[in-house]
Length: 507
Ligand code: FAD
Ligand code: DLZ
Ligand code: SF4
Image 1 (cartoon, rainbow, N blue to C red):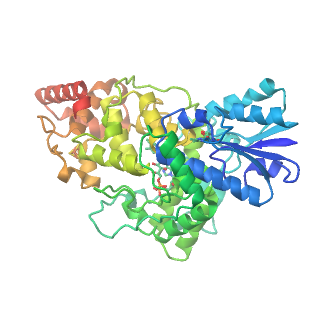
Image 2: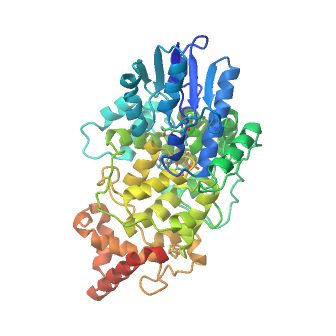
Image 3: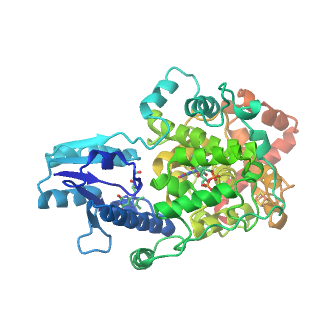
């Protein structure tokens, strides 16, 4: 008999493990374990989504005739780790082979790689085919390139997939990228769609009770029904997202007070858990464009995020070994308490962290240009920041979280992923949101007690890293602006930055 282990983010009907097993003879094992639940302090909503989706998936498999051994965390036989769960099954049954689709995290892949020797039983690790490009093909694309840039990868992926390509293999609309049409600020109109909610069932109720009981000290609120946890809920979420995608393109980079979702799809957790496939999501969006239900800047902008960014960061995680510690800017400040408490006068940070605590969600620009930008210019230690991002979002899995945090947001990878750091002053946040209007700080001020901290920290960042970045052509304008200032002004900015860094915890 073969033992097929299915992990919490492998909840796909097309999973290679399922294709490799025999429904009549083999055994599927799924286990909620302490090691996975506690290796970072996961948001309680993420734990809820993970365990509820696992239990629903196990039920679906059992109804389809599979033999499933499921270990709930609150059951009599709960295990500390996946290794221990597998060991328990091997002791109980005669197992000829262990089959597992490759885990999405290096940490777990390394552990699985040691099982064959440990158990004295063959372990077959299958390639995860649920992505649009294999790691081998990604490595071949990356091989020999001086710089790995998403835009070139994305164009190549458009050609490979044929998504939004004309019959003569040209991009729809004669343009690869409508990025410039994705930057409108949102001023209250049109109204964003309400998120699709689901009716919690008995599995959801028992998982919610378990989270309350076993993770009472955990961070974040739990709302059963807020995120899809079954395949059919994920399909409804996709239909809902596509129906409301028309304004995604225009307001992709917008932020607004008390508007956690705006026009974003909220599909990342379903995608990352395996409830949706990236291709079906992109095809649904392309279809909506061809039926003239959504404009090209929305369809292209959205598809770029999936076949571009999502596949690109996965390739980089493995190819550039981004699972290893990164700190090219030598940043070491500790994470201020308000990343957990939201207790800060900086309204933009307060908004991003509050909604993260409430829903396990912030959209991309909040993650990149508010919390990420702050962490970059304030010089927070990258590994602490990365652990925070991995902990607080419902969609957080290391293969996607680390490249985004260490590469895109913090430039801690030495610029292998982006050509320049995404450092910005309060002006950017003011342009893209209404946060500054109600902030205690004054976004127009650069010095003084109520000056927006993003301003002082931004100039300090440019000055403290000028040896590295001054020669970067893409940062020329930033340094020209710095050079226009008098020496006295630059001194004042430096002092402002120093003071802000000295009192990061009281901002
Ligand atoms: P939408 O805005 O509707 O975008 C559509 C889809 O595109 C998303 O569902 C997602 O699958 C994909 N996507 C968009 N941007 C990215 C990106 N940069 N990388 C990979 N996929 C992308 N995304 C995660 O899925 N997990 C993470 O742990 C994660 N950590 C991040 C950390 C930082 C510092 C930053 C800057 C971004 C991170 N992202 C992460 C990317 C992005 O913020 C989320 O994918 C997005 O906010 C999810 O919300 P949505 O489904 O409404 O996305
Ligand atoms: C995220 C997560 C959590 C919280 N718990 C479990 C678990 O108990 N059992 C399990 O099989 N998987 C869990 N996961 C998902 C794994 O952490 C995920 O498979 C790895 O991080 C690889 O991406
Ligand atoms: Fe954020 Fe500064 Fe605007 Fe306040 S003034 S919301 S701190 S950017």
